[in-house]
Length: 121
Length: 108
Image 1 (cartoon, helix red, strand yellow):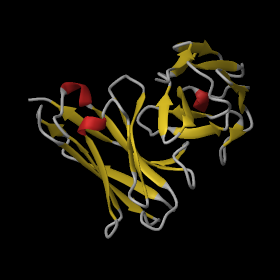
Image 2: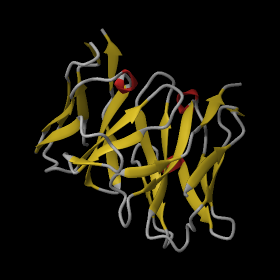
Image 3: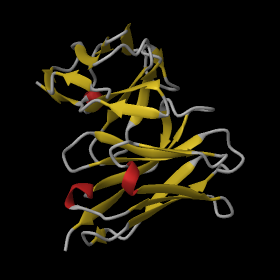
């Protein structure tokens, strides 16, 4: 059974890099014909797509965040990573990792429980 | 830029009644729409995709309809566990996807 578990520092200072990891169990990221990605939810707000990566390594980012985001995969450990550079207060949110339906990043079938990150000095 | 607008922001209904939630796309997305349910402290759960196809293990009281720019999620015979937040999400130009801002379904 697929399980996604996000982890991160909890608190990041403005202008620093927000770095999160999603540990995947029950499936192999590299051999999976799925897309894996990140979505965030600011306190009391809706969902915002951050970006995603395919098993081939191709990445796609929300245009509003593209200049600051890097998503990568550590296939040896089946880990998905998110780096958000030059963090600002507006990046304070609950960050989810997710896996799409087979073969395309259309709708998201599996989600982690999320990890909260606050950006504050 | 695609904008998804959900209405109303909050919907108050009684258990046993029918709830109708709306989602409008700023441009046509055919039937490339999904609905999610989110309860406090939980991750979103996929309910509907393709505008009208229920996801695995989703009860039949949840139904979706619409195409183009206007979509509806209907929940018939509301049960206590249905009171939650609901989000629509378009994927017409995937992998670039956009969520609506959500509708809170509360007990009347």
